[in-house]
Image 1 (cartoon, rainbow, N blue to C red):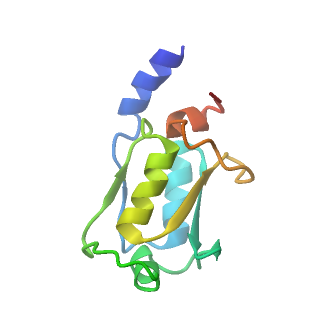
Image 2: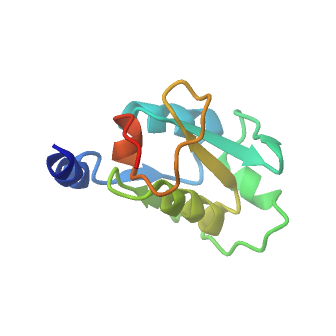
Length: 122
C-alpha cells in the first residue's frame, strides 16, 4: 500500500501554491485543507503574526532574500517535509515547521508530506 500511496501523492495537490501576498493565517489554513497537516510559520523564535502577509514578514527578516514580489512557492504531497521547510526559508526567509494534524508534534523531515498526513513513520 505504501508504493500506491507514494504514487498517489505525486498527483494529489500536484501544485499547492504559496503566494507572497497571502496572509499567514490563509497559507496555514489552505495548507491544512490541502494536505491534512499543520503548518506553523515563525518569525524568529515565535509564531508569526497571522494577519501579516508572507511578503511583509520577508521584509522584516534579517536574511537577505531576493524573492520577487510575484514569485510563488509550489509544494507537492510527494515532497519531503524537510525539503518543503527549506523552500520557505530560501524563498521568504521564514522558518516553518510541518506538524501533525493536531499541530502538537513536528513530523520527521525525512517523511513526505503525504506520509505525514497519513500518520506514517519511517
